[in-house]
Amino acid sequence: MTAQIISGKDIAKQIREEIKQEIAELKEKHNVVPGLATILVGDDPASQVYVGSKEKTCQALGIYSERHDLPESTDEAALLALIDRLNEDNKINGILVQLPLPKHINENNVIMAIDPKKDVDGFHPVNVGKIMIGEPEYLPCTPHGIQELLIRSDTKIDGADVVVVGRSNIVGKPIANILLQKKEGANATVTICHTGTRDIASHTKRADILIIALGRPKAITADMVKDGVVVIDVGVNRIGKTEEGKDILCGDVDFEAVKEKAKAITPVPGGVGPMTIVMLMENTVKSAKLAAGLV
Ligand code: GUN
Image: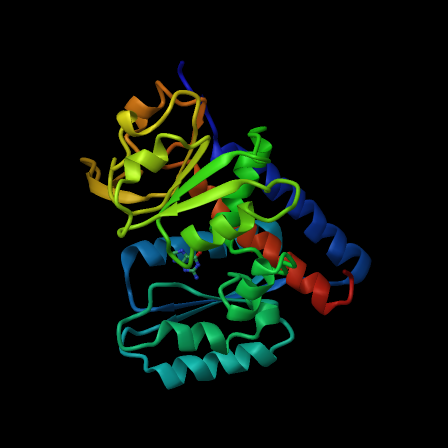
């Protein structure tokens, strides 16, 4: 079997069009323009690319955006003061602080300073808790993108054995939480594997849906999966440079080998990555609608 390639690029494009339409209607009927503030501390090249793409997408869709680039030496108090100001700014519906932050800044303090109503990343404990009790307000962008990829590729989630490899707060834990909810597009039996798991392959081999977010190139090999599995590869690993100096990317899955056994698989690049950004836009629009009393 050669797998169906789940193109996050194509699915994200479709969702972008849906969001663009909604933003145009919000403006026309209600004079509401959603606004997103991005904050980048330091000059990590990958983070700069991510924040740049978020800004560009805002502009393409008609979302007001402002970018705050702060030097690496910024102290926590100054960052918290900026967040306070943005919490009070009515033009701003979403505040995104790009992670990771420099080591001298406590990430949890920063996340907790963001008004949960403007937490379009879905990282604030209030929003994490709402997912846990089955009353989500903002789903975190990457996990939400993964769920959309599964739904829009007609993958049966209800009753499926889902195995997640990686337990980060950004991907592993929230996607597990989302897919185990008793809801449409979920209701799966979920296992999370991590560095303390004794025999990862014994779990991955029985997965109907395998979600990999561990940050190690080609760590999941063909002998670790069963025939007919649906694979979502969240890994983005830089494994070299092209002659033109562009990064060569690969996922956490040995794509070429695993695609011969899988029913469907996401590529890297062009799989999960493009979905994360559109889900951020969707959350920003939702926040604007909530602020305007439209939902
Ligand atoms: N760094 C890696 N992924 C993310 C994300 O989804 N949101 C933020 N704010 N930072 C990230």
